[in-house]
Amino acid sequence: MRTRNQLEVLAVVLLFTASLVGQGASGPPNAPPDHLDKEPWSFSFRTTGYVVPHDLSYASPTFTADYDRLHLEARYNYEDQETGSLWLGYNLNFGEKLVFEATPMLGGVFGTTAGIAPGFAISLAYRKLALSSEGEYVFDTGKTSSNFFYSWNELTYSPVDWFHAGVVSQRTRAYHTELDLQRGLLFGFSHKKIDFTTYILNAGWTDPTFVISLGFNF
Image (cartoon, rainbow, N blue to C red; front, side, top):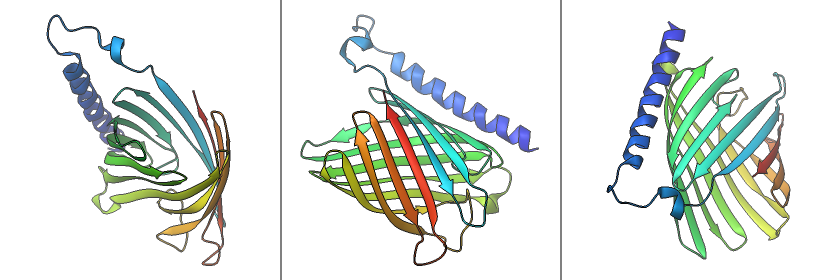
């Protein structure tokens, strides 16, 4: 039954993707090719390692691809361990000094947890301050009582280009702690297209969880 649910989830996501691609391809017969006035593809890869007290430590890789407004994303071990998800989104951005970016998304989740997940990624940046949030609500196709809202939120300050520090919070079911909403501190370094960030969650409330993230943009 779970395999059938996973196939149904993937079918819905693929049909939704195909419909958007078809809409984007339509236009006046004499319209110039889209690629003449669009930015090239951009990609990112990030792997995040979780060192969880009294539980199994694991890694969660994420890959994204963007072309103009189109956003594609693949995640593993994010919604649950031994679980993958595929995402389709639409990029929006506004402002120059105060920059707001938003990407509404729709995803299909398959593996230990299977379902449909509307989600988002938003950020607000002003000078050296940045606020970001990503979240999703998973509608579990196998068990409605397992529906869950996931979120990851950061507020950072960058005194120099290569260093950032701040606070973080998250809500997840990929692993279990005594806290429903986890929170903590972060500090990180960046060089050109590489970013390295360390997070310390729950220190002072319960046994701390350490998270190490390494990202590449290309």
